[in-house]
Image (tube, rainbow, N blue to C red; front, side, top):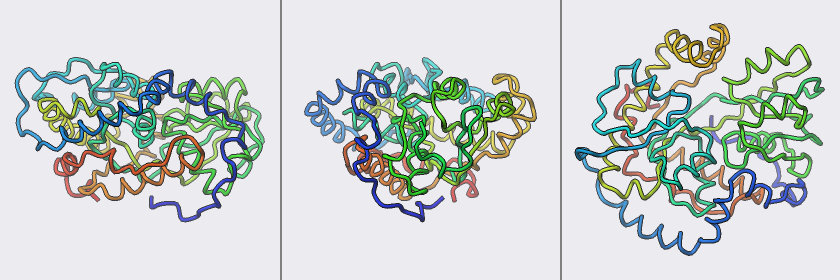
Amino acid sequence: MPPLSARSPRPSSPLSASGVDRRVFLSSVAGIAAAAGLSGCAGASAAGTRSQEDLSAPLSDKVPRGTALKVASYQGVQQLQFKLAGLSGLPFTVSDWVNIGAGPDVINAFRAKSLDIGNNAGIPPIQAHFQGFDAKIVAIDITRKPNYLFATKPGSDIKDVQDFKGRKLAFSQGQAQGVVLLRALKQAGIAYGDVKLVPLTSNQFLTALQAGQVDVAPLANSQAPAYLKQYGPKGARSIATDVVDLLNLLWAPSSVLADRAKAAAVAAYIPRWAKGQVWAYEHPDAWNEEFYVKTQNLTLDQARSITALANKPLFPPSWDEAIKWEQETADLLAEGGFVKAFKVGSLFDRRFEALAARAVPAEYRR
């Protein structure tokens, strides 16, 4: 989806008007590590300069023997895709497949050196930068259809986005769901002061909805069917929009990418990551059965409803559109006072730019 065609006026006094205390966001969403990152901005800046020099080295075509990576595989998705698509035989050791997905958790795992490469949307790298943590985007998959819809609490009278005014909305500053909500509000011309943003992480959204602690929460397409099946008869409903979170990406700490052996391993991982997504898209019946039914305990009908909404993978040879979108996202967060304004080009390690595109057929590049 291209950048939003309808632009509402810049919200006035966004953070104070919304009743959201920045300190609440930093502690409840980003974790205590954010404060540590912010307090060390000068050191982070110096470290960032050194890592930029290290990241200028060309990528090696061969992965040195003994190289290992700790790879994010939330709910086993990457492992299963690799297995089903016959993508075994990695030229490096996966020392740990880490069951981790939420942006704030990935950032903390990067800090703890318990993860080398993660899979997230566009907002976690922005949040990491705001915290003073140096990490880079190494692969891009562009999504054209919404991956999220808005769900209401049981018994709600909300019927469209305009009804969000005056309501309590679940908001995760450091995750894709957060920027989807902010973009939906802006598209509808709703100022932050017209709603109450409730700081939560995405794994708290369902509980908050069920308990009526929030009126609305953005849910992933994979979450919504089970929630609506249980609570739809009690008055919960979905609110669909055309707002997308454009970026599905791989990213890694700069310290990992400055290690030539690990950078080579990351470069070897990216094509397989792209091919695994293409395989799942081209084999929906097998993916429904092997993943959604067998591992997520969904019915086959629920699985089919999810894959019917699935995005066709798109790995662009150029990241220009992705960078433009990421800049819009960072600017939107800065307007709300959630991060400081900056140029997002520094988040992309363009040495890796064409690797995913080269690995897939032409129809998955445009």
